[in-house]
Length: 85
Length: 159
Image: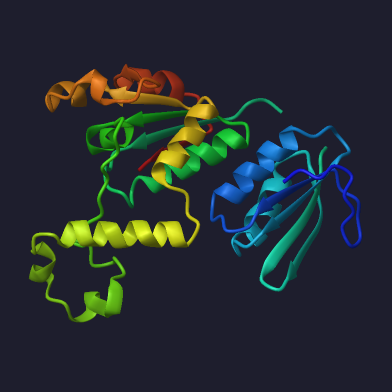
């Protein structure tokens, strides 16, 4: 699940969370837990299949000190890049 | 950021209604809230060591049923013995298939995140329940225990 320094198609990230197959509230809870393990400035990539995450992940980012850099839907999957604040 | 507080009262003891308090509590705890949940009356079923939660179509016209049964199946039919077990089994299969967390899983997330789970002492006395029937991680308390926390909580919900 954790691939430090891996390269996605566009951006470097420090950790990846595979949230595929999970429904609310698990994608957000595990996203928060993963971010808690990062240092400020590091980037988490999240891959989810829950369509609700398209609303919930930005809603989480808005109430935290972290920044949602990117959210993309591709082939039924949702990809997020979140920078730890 | 100063810590926010969430106070919930959980009063229902069915599989479907077990979700809202545990989903909200686990999410709030992950968001950094200090969370207390007060379990009273049937809500205490959610704190048992061995969870045996069921869902019933009886008296629940809003419940989606297979083959559109809620449209044509006589209401009296929902009282047939075994109906509750069958619906519970179907619901659990659906929960698993859709990737929705089990109640045990959400409850564990709450415990790991230090959500305070409070069982209502009066309910335990009323129904002759035993402390040993419930998980070790709970505290017991009453109405004033709830208000000690809820009095200055940012969010309070009765479920």
